[in-house]
Each structure stands twice: as structure tokens, then as C-alpha cells.
Image (cartoon, rainbow, N blue to C red; front, side):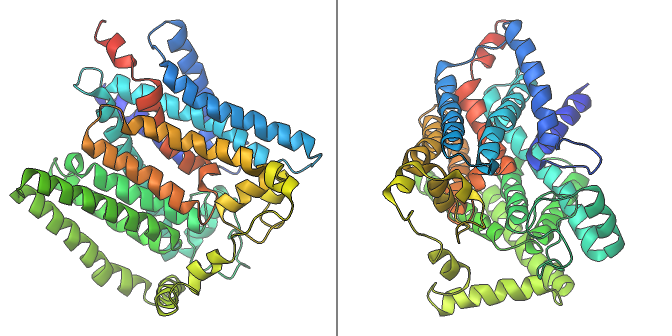
Length: 430
């Protein structure tokens, strides 16, 4: 029974966050999970087994207001371009139900444990890690076997600018069965690495075979990340900085370093160094992915940020040309072909104006502010801090808050800690 529960939770987390699309099915996996979520959550609510917190509903009402505002802006603009409205409404009808279902399932799974909310969060990290490992294996196989790549990309189509062999980056942007390409794919795998590291204690606490499998999983994720772009390395860097500062704080607070902690740090360092030295460079030495990554880093350093990726981003920041567009926006500009910018903040501002801009980012900021002031462990707070900071930094490059897979990742803690915490009090009375 436990294996069945773990397997079901694993599939729900994996399919919701990966948004896999099969060529002969009309819906992506997150949409299927969201339909299932609405059905299950309504049944639970009707049976009065869950008590929804008002503050959680208030937080999600901000997102609802944003969706209504974006729809209103779309109607007033008389534009036939519905891309922005579709993305915003997908957050509501796909992202929210999926995150709520994940929260409910994982909290119920841990109902007999102390601090079921924290354990639900760590379970989410574990399941996301292992599912992203499975996806990364398809990337590695696709890289080594062109025939498999052809079959995989035909069966699991992608939406993005790197979807056919005519694209100059196609040869080394290998996505496996993931629907995301380029930066989006690299960020997906980077989150897999960091969320796996967050739950390292549970992952390495098992048998030797399980520990060996975990190490292989990290290797596979690093391969997939390397083959898909540079944005994911920004996520890793943010994670290293935040958790290093958290580690230093804990050491200074306790005035001691345990032998166990030292061995974990050394083991992690050994894994990273060994992966780069013996696997990444030998295997991908002739790949343009490594060349492009190193060249871009060299340009950034040598030019002081005026060239390379950062230099290109500096040219992508500009305000709307008129006061009317600044206040109310033009939803048709969200299409990247309409304005010369990929930056998320710029595209959102141009699409729905300053008011919609404030409402949208207020939802994410206020929800995580509630998490931070809640009575949760410092480790969970550091993990949530990483998630939201990484997303706000990634938004400098692309509108990751509007990408369904990444929005679900950061909605799960919102649902666990803001929306459904009263599940546990009801369960203890059963």
C-alpha cells in the first residue's frame, strides 16, 4: 500500500511539473492532472475533510483578480492575440488545481507524522528530483542515439524556438521527451538538482544501491543541464549562495561543525568535481554546448558584463513609448516578435501596464512573505527563499512566472503553507 501511495504521489508531482505532451493526445499532462485535481478536491471539500484557510484563499484571489484584469485588458485592446490571456488563465485553471492536489496528497500521506507540512514539502522535493532524473535520462539517450532522439521528439512534441533541425542551436539543445527547449529545459533540470540537494538527507539515508542511484541521478541532471543552456547554471549559483549562507549562519549559531556535515559537503564537492572532470568534458568535449557556455562566460568576465548574455539583457530593458501603454499596456506585445525583448518584467509591463504588473508580481511576493512569517523550520524557509529568489532572478531573462511548469513548482509551497495547513488539525481528530 505504501508503494502504491508513493507511486501515485510521484506520478502526480512528475506529470504536473513536467507538462509532458504526447503527439496523439490533445492535452498536456498538467491539464490532465488539473482536471483530476478539481474532481478530487471538490469531493474532499464536500465531505468536509479539509478546512481551507482564509489567508490562502485571499492569496489566490489576487491571482484570480490578475486573470480577470488580463482578460479585461484583452477585450479592451480589441486584439485577436490571446497568448498572454491564455498563459495567465492557465496559471489559474492548471497551476492552482495541480499545486493544491499535490499539497493535499502529500500532507495526507504524512498525516501520522509530526510536522506533516514540512514532510510534504520534502516529499515534493524528492519526487520532483526523481522524475526530473527520468527525463534527463531521455536527454542523455537522445544525445548518444540520434535515432532515439528522432522518435522521442516526434512522440513528445515541444513548443519553443528550438524545435527543428534548421535552428542553429538544434544540434546541441537536446531535450529528450521534455516539452521545454533551451533555457526552459535547463531551468527544469537545475531545479531538479537543487530540490534533490534539499532532500539529500532522505536520499542518502537508504541502502548503498539507493545512494549510488542518487549519485547517478545528479550526474544525469548535470548532463541534461549542460546540453540545454546557461540559465540553469544561474539557478544553481543562486542555490549555492543561499544554502552556503544558511550553512554559515547555522555554524555560527551553533559554534560547531559536525563530522556528518563535513562529509556531506566533501561528498557533494567530490560529485561536482568528478562529474565535470571525468564525465562532462570527455563526453561533451566536441559539443558546441560546452564551447558556447565557456565563450559566453569569458565574454561576460572580460567585458565587465557589457557582452555575452548579460550584455544582451541590458539592451532588452525599456519602457513603453506612451503613457497610455505604460498605464494599461497592449496584450499583443507579449508575443516576442512584437517587441525586441525576452525579459519577463518588460514583456509583462508592455502587455498589461503598470497596474497589471503590480498585481501579478504582488501575488508571488505576498504569498512567499506569508510562508516566511509562518512557524516553519529554518531549513524550509531557506529552501522557499531559494525558490522565490531564483524565479525573480530568472524573470530578468524570460517570463518564467508565466511558464506553467515553473509556476507550479513555486505554487506547491504556497498551497502547502498558505492554503491547506488546517488539513493536519482535522486529521488528528479522526
